[in-house]
Length: 477
Image (tube, rainbow, N blue to C red; front, side, top):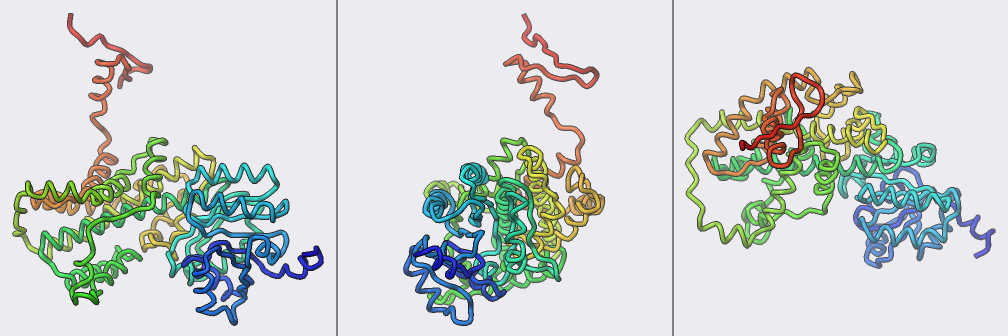
């Protein structure tokens, strides 16, 4: 194709590689907002699905290969990828690179690890190609009707796609749930922590379900009513909304509640593990995310659980006031929810310093307030707290939230105690209680640990009454 023909073809605002469920829906979203999209996918099924649903009236042009895709996009080009993380991203970049010019922009909108984003950005920068990592949350429905978007990378290039992203993103009122978050891999890091918080919240909700199902003997219609009521209060959130709806679904094959027909084995794609791994590196405690990852691993150990089941003791019967316990369980869940957000935001605060992101946590809370999986009424208070004090040392240092948590701690304690008596595992609620107690305690028994380390390894210790490090000859001669 000649240069003149290339110029004639370049009518699309953006290219999109990857027309799976997310890609197809995001393409329709962009087209509905008045943007012209050039799309490519190597899978015939994806292209047939897009054609079947129709592109008439929507400005979506399907390319036959990477060269055709790039020929359709207006210079300087912006090409977005919505492909699985890992090797597929590198493969797409390798195929795109020869078709791009210096100054063109590639946007990775998948769940890539932030270290991969840094690596790709540096490699492409040497060739004059701009690379941005952008987290996207909201699932297929969010991609179609408005996701939460978390772009990072060179700020000077964000302006090129800002109008497109703001139009496509979810809106809370008139405010779009998208913002440039920081340089380098900031966008993918924020999305990783978003997913870590998501893991923690889902585990907490599952534990309340277990307590009410096995502990109180409640059935799906009753559970639906409880979660729906909780959704109307302080726990208002997307996850609470869909949890209530799940208990209404009937299995077409058996006529029973579908929830009772689903195997108790939770899978994962790794973002929770990534969150825990970098939190360990940065020495930031995220016990609720860690517990959630651990329980997913344990749920997958079906053979071990089956083998050990014969040793199970009969659970104790719940003998207290059920309605009162359900109210206390609601309060306990809210306290643990605040703790989980606090852990994720504490990690973002430390990562911002360590990785040079310069994150504004009020902006992060705003971006999460609509479209994404962890959107919740609580984020309004979180945004307000960091807007009022951008240097807030910890979310629990916000007076309003601290007062709420202190008020709810009694109920969290009672719920954890009851779960232990019933023999129902609630590691998320338990570690949330321990985390909150440790944060508020002012003193921890780490002095004994330091004494032990000095005893067996001469690792030294610090004193409460003097500066410096000290060592003691502990063994008696």
